[in-house]
Image (tube, rainbow, N blue to C red):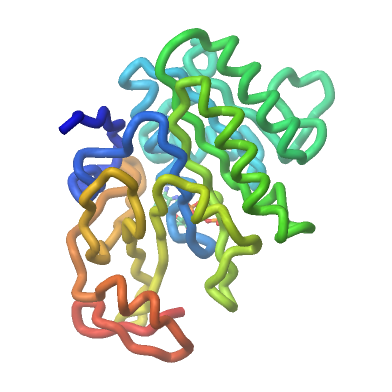
Length: 261
Ligand SMILES: Nc1ncnc2c1ncn2[C@@H]1O[C@H](COP(=O)(O)OP(=O)(O)OP(=O)(O)O)[C@@H](O)[C@H]1O
Ligand SMILES: [Mg+2]
């Protein structure tokens, strides 16, 4: 069998549940409700890239570049330095300041892929990592375009030796995406979520899909800590079927039972 080269995510415990990491060249959807850890995960993936000498491109649409770099620093990842050293580019699609080389003038998929290619050219030849945080911003006013846009991003960037995390937000009220189709186009789906157990917010993660990989189907508890960031604490008793069933007020087996938010 051909061996698949896998990229480490930089989150302790996560690579083990998906066969050692994300296959090189994959486009992986990272989905979940607000505050579940998608951005922190994206930062780990980017930082791991810096550590391994990859070219790193982080596109931020929900927070400014400063906010993202500050968040990274708080988790012990001095990404700002990597930007200064020319190892990483943070494309700011929120502030869109004129005269800033790395901001998006318009929130369109065309502009996004052009800028990413420009960044890749600038960073140079070799293995690259891309985080788009988030893709939802590109189709918020036209959710029916989500699948087509995701497809364009994958098709255009495929040739640039890029392994990508495409973050997508899920609504608090419905627990669903704001557009449909990214998960189908993606080579993998990593879902973050949250629940309340004993009056305390708990975060979890589940690898819902990873092509060419025999991944763990269990729901894992996630911890986020100042200074160190995210780590995977261990499997819970909830199974993927419990999540699929979903529904208001449904109790599921977080160690001793929890309620979905
Ligand atoms: N320095 C820190 N120390 C401890 N926990 C932190 C720290 N910074 C952030 N967090 C936790 O991480 C959460 C934010 O996670 P993150 O920004 O990754 O969420 P998200 O899934 O990207 O949400 P959104 O969809 O709103 O962007 C915060 O709500 C907080 O609980
Ligand atoms: Mg975020």
